[in-house]
Length: 282
Image (tube, rainbow, N blue to C red):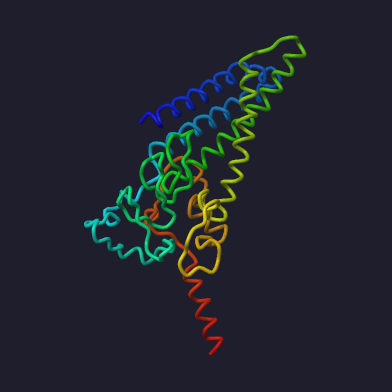
């Protein structure tokens, strides 16, 4: 509870405080230059802050998802572990070729599932554990996490640039607003940091990799390629973000009937390639 409440409160208060500063001094400054510009800025900044906060809390409240939510993955008899039938469709295996089992959670681990020591449980399609949320980014909340990155990055950069302009004009007149200057610094620091991580996340989405899969070697059965989940950038994007304008709003959940325990992969394409090779040798 505290692991999410503390960072959640901090981030929310920080966002509201920065907005209150820009909604006051900065909006008045822009309105003096142009009433239309000031009005547009306050509308855009308010919209971005609201979306950022909603996405942030959606990530926390929805959570990443866990195989513990699926009774069929929890063995009835720990002494005689028999993999569930669905494990035949999994492509990630142990070094001995068998399905993966978590001895801490006592549950079978589907493809892309990993145990998180911070959350103290296995996470479906685990990307990483994020201290800024106090929880993992996984199958269920990945889309909201990416939305948070997009909205917070745009907001931070926008506020950073306009606040810096305001501070510069104040210095020319021999004045300074500590609040606006601090917001300008925060805007650039967070904006540049978020911009880099957002770019990395977009790359992972387009290649259908998680952060863990980028840095840890995975064992796959019947593999000829590096990433069995790479289905082309359009399908990769659709698997997390879907398509359409509404997918950019923090509404809805993943509606995949497999629920994060089964993922499309190119295993079938491998089989076709192997059979074609065998027929060509006949």
